[in-house]
Image 1 (cartoon, one colour):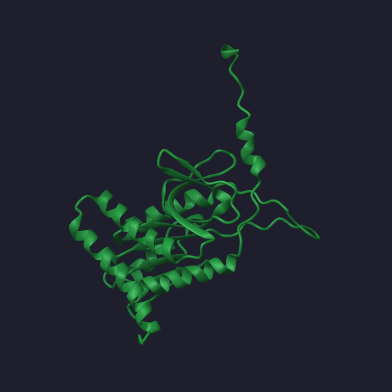
Image 2 (cartoon, one colour):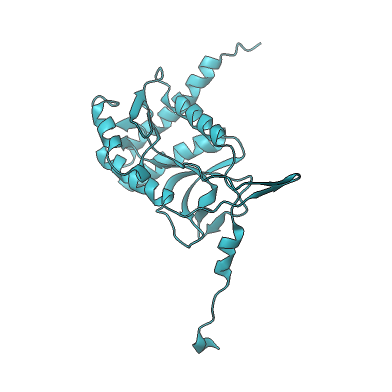
Amino acid sequence: MRNWSLQALLSGLHDDIQQRLAPVRTVFSHPGTKSDASEAVWLELLQKYLPMRYQAASAHVVDSTGAFSDQIDVVVFDRQYSPFIFHYQGETVVPAESVYAVFEAKQAINAEQVAYAQRKVQSVRKLHRTSLPIPHAGGVYQAKPLQHIIGGLLTFESDWNPGLGDSLKSALAAGSEEGRLDLGCIAAHGLFKCDGIGCVTTAPMGRAATAFLFELIARLQEKATVPMIDVGAYAKWLDVEVPASAV
């Protein structure tokens, strides 16, 4: 009979992530290739372990006004209640109402990458989101208030020494509230968590990737479901006027 150990299972999950992230820095020389390889590792983690109602993908986010976000390395979005996700020329496009969280995935964290991630997160949060009243058997629920989209940064290591020190906290504190990074994982060091007051860092017994996964799932559970999307607001883009020269 196998002697199971929950501690060993949780440690093994982190070790698997770290062992796959570590060679990326030395094996690949091109920065874009490194970034793509890191992104793939984090996406596989989320695709494998998040509940089925969520999906994780590299994507752009679009709103009903026709505005698009920047390309985002990791978008965690609803797949149970969202009526449409676009796939076009190998790219995924997700409606803004469906998004729970967005992350950038890089090899190492530093001030430049923090600022870059903040701009990417801001490009999603500034998009317009609809929310309709929700019909049910006994009547209609009020439209759900728009919830905060989690933003963050995922890396293997830190360019700072110490990796979770004041330099990290100073970089996280810079920038606008709309671009604030709420949650991040530096696999070789630990986690950071930020709110409107400040940032804290933790080094969870050298098992940062597992701790990040649990923290993200807990935050997603708090959010419950995404708002009811106004499909009509998107459908209006089907009404295309024919130019007079074509009549």
